[in-house]
Amino acid sequence: MKVLVLTADANTLIYHRGDLIRDFAAHGCEVVTSAAEDYPHVKEFVASLGGRHRAIRMVRSKVNPLKDLVTLRDMWRMFREEKPDALFAYTIKSVVYGCVVARLAGIRRVYALLPGLGFTFVKPVTWKQKIVSRISEALHRFALKRADVIFMQNHDDVKLFTEMNMLPASVPVHVTAGSGVNMEEYSHSPLDEDETLETGHVRFALVSRLLISKGVRVFAEAARRIKQMHPHAEFHLVGPFDPNPNRVEEREVHQWVAEGTLVHHGMVKDVASLLKKMHVFVLPTWYREGVPHATLEALATGRPIITTNSVGAKECVKLTAEGEQQRRDGEMLMQGENGFLCQPQNVAAVECAMEWYLAHPDQVVKQGHASRQLAAEVFDVHLVNEIILKAMHLHEAPRSTAVLCHPSPLPLAA
Image (tube, rainbow, N blue to C red):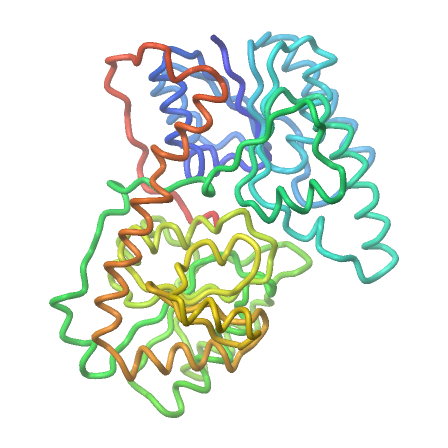
């Protein structure tokens, strides 16, 4: 069986879907990958599995009719030349355009994964947003009718698409727990012997693209307030600047660094090693996530989580009975077994959660173990990939005995 894996961002072929591609190859599939970039490290990874990578022209973050026509033409040519048995497409343009062109090109099986809806299905405010939203809805509705199986990453997205009549009744829908996390690559790093916690040197980290909707400004403001009361607390911002219109400007980050609020690490290749030096992971997002991959890595490493009660993000904190009541009551902070959920865009809530860990350093250790357990029970990449393999009828195929290469750590791609 020949599988063509199509996405907009080449790095995610390893960072988010590397284990799935390995599984395709291990089950005897010939794999071809395609994305907007022709990165050497991606080509090397795919080649190590006996596959090939080829780039197509695709503008990832904007709709440009002329350039999108070029994308459609490139897809058509690639599908006709490769003649895959199946298309596995993820990210918005890959799904919306890929499903339709694949059918026209005669590909027999089409699998669509929606890893997160982002801004596309957030309630529009401006007329421009409303127009873009309506166009996106129409394109998704048209494209998903061409899929054989649809994968979504949380039940809130399924509910929304069901209410909007976006999901064809004849197409099965499977929910995966995000992209999953490799529990060996992101191994447990217990904090039991960390003596710095008792001295107030708690290190908080946010790992993400630097977008406003990922809560970067909320994190910085909460850090500024905590620093005034707890000068030994540390705040680490990890991630590259982003061209997205929703970006945090470089001058803002430079100002935070200059005033001593936080440390900016920029793009980090070995995220796992960095997380092991941190104590608490923070992602105050209100972006419509699938399930944030960086948060899954922090769970696997064994770090308590401060995030928001928003779509996708809330999956990463298991609320206590008290926390569930706090959510029903609409409180700004909700207690979990492995962290806290905060109201989105609420600096005070994030500040309170940080303050709690500074006052209860022993709970950093305890909740870190709870995070690791949650990752193992729900988000292990093998559990996630098994859902996909079964839906594609690959779980019964014999596994290859070949030794599969593991890629070097990649730059952050949250």
